[in-house]
View 1 (cartoon, rainbow, N blue to C red):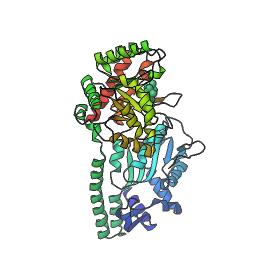
View 2: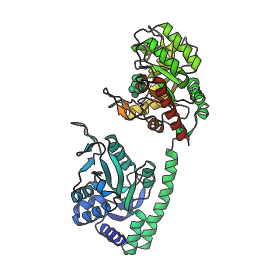
View 3: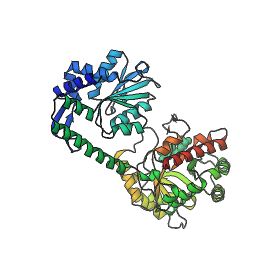
View 4: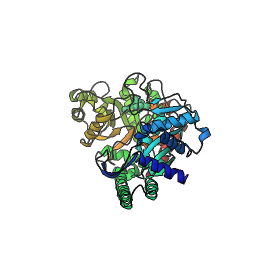
Length: 471
Ligand code: 5BU
């Protein structure tokens, strides 16, 4: 194999796949080596040799059911492999089509199919991880990623940390050694590239450290001291003391049923969330009962109204009307869609309230096709940074770092699932790993036949995932 690889390295050099000089990378950094496997489409013999050598790395070729090529350069290699092995090929688009089926994956496949990813170069590993996420979303099982060149810039580690096995034909250092020993490059070119690799590795390490979100590895008690909003502080204290991150979505339409559920769930939850306008028999008596349970069992009450109007209107919606939400809801949810004026309106709605209050901004929704993307998310995060009333964000991933703020994540069930109306579920462990501090569970509990067992199961799984996340 070594001789074959050396010959291949020389062929790649001869057809200008590997070039030396001074080049600028996509992000504007200087690099002494440039690798472009796209030229291989013009060199069929070498394309076949490379593809076949790559396939020899496969650890379980007979059990592979799908060959997935990553556009563009690796598509032709995946094609050769699929042709040779007569296995079907799938392709993950760079962008989803904005017409027709909006599919990201092209090909014929079924959930459970075992798949190998073919890629030309791995640098940080993010492109492969994106492909892995999309394949997994469709239920495919990833055996491994086969890669021609590992640039030794953190990609292998990142993939392995995410549970993706990777095999490469060459590392950049190996390629340099082959070319040096074949007299294709001189010692000074070799040294330049090796030096470049060393400094690059160091800067990748620094960038990785900077990217780490320490919010996820700091415990609730320490974070309670960093919270600007007194209610955020209280949520941290409750979670720490009761050892629970469970926010129960008591989405029931009878006041009595909610009270019954709160009575059994009370000792195990940090927050009880309701939608007041779905209750058939709402009354101030119900609020009194709920308040007394919240004091008895030490949980907070959240009204999930998702306020979303101009400041003047929300100030009335918050404090007036039948519900007088500001008088009893410790926490509410708010769509930032109207801009910062909505928060000013809510603050105005609290004029006659002396107790502490907090709001969660709905920065990202759990439902399929939600419009909460891109700059909407960015602007919502910045609205949160600028208001003391905001205790945190409702979102699906660790979008922010401020350890004094709380991530509330809905869409949680014991198995990854969805309902018929767009709701998408993830497991307790996966939402916690995606940054959830408080996790919202509704039907996973309200529709369970044995509710108390379900409550304890969610509470325990969430808590142990939080403990694991700390370490
Ligand atoms: P479920 O039964 O676990 O699907 O209930 C989830 C609850 O969280 C329900 O009350 C929703 O209104 C709420 N929710 C959500 O599911 N997704 C979101 O993005 C937001 C709130 Br915001």
